[in-house]
Image (cartoon, rainbow, N blue to C red; front, side, top):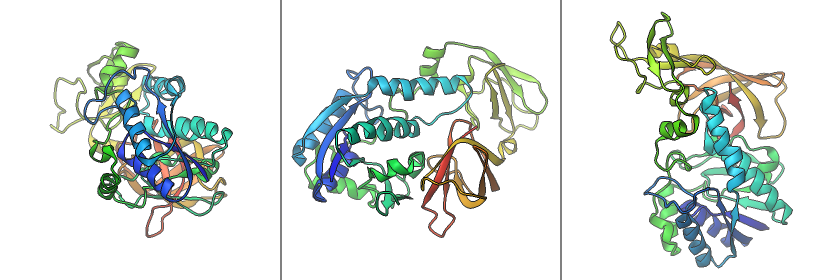
Length: 359
């Protein structure tokens, strides 16, 4: 097969490309230039898409002996991921930019271009597994549970999964680094990127304030309606948040308060005790089914609402175009804008059924 290997400049994508070469595929490496400020160098494990990362990807391609290109997707990334991220926070939602990037960039814009150029598949360094032939693919959790990325890949459609390759999903991360060292790849010990790639400072609230400005509003006790303080913008909060609430006095019972809800129109942030965070039912829009076919009735599943953790047995069903997920035990810290991924409830619990965006 002709395979386009998306090479971020990290160790995972480099080894994924190497394994695609070993499998006998005709591999071409490509680095996606996503940053509008590529001159800004990565600092330790923060950020990505710098000139340093592009150079690391090129060196890995040279070692593997494959052609290498840099494709400028910065404009598309800014529109589909960065701008949407800002818009979601302004609307009181908590988006997952990695999930959005997979959906709109790596397996939409990139895959579309790859197919148009005659490639059969896009290969990435994601930690997930694919079983079955194209057209009947099953997306599964990675062997390394601590690195599993099936949650952020749960938005992929049947067609996108048919043209995807995840060669490192069957291996522990420590073994990937060791393999990279054996292959002579200079990225073997390179730190993983963390946080949000386009906010290398790690200060999400500050970054959002630069773009949205200060929009003061009240912090209100959700149970009593009492105004407890004032904030500078709803974009500084997410459901389940405990610190930085701008409240100058403790609750009457001395227990900590948490963000329970955000009302962007009125600019109100509602806070209260932890038990009020319990969620028993989820509602999601834009459902995606890995098989390409929606279920014709309620299905037993395991629901996951965060990239790592936030799991509960559940029953999911479609109500028109809306996905409703009834949890058998409550979950906490569930924020609109995140995804709910559904997994099969078998003993392994590692097969993705589908996903939706929480509203």
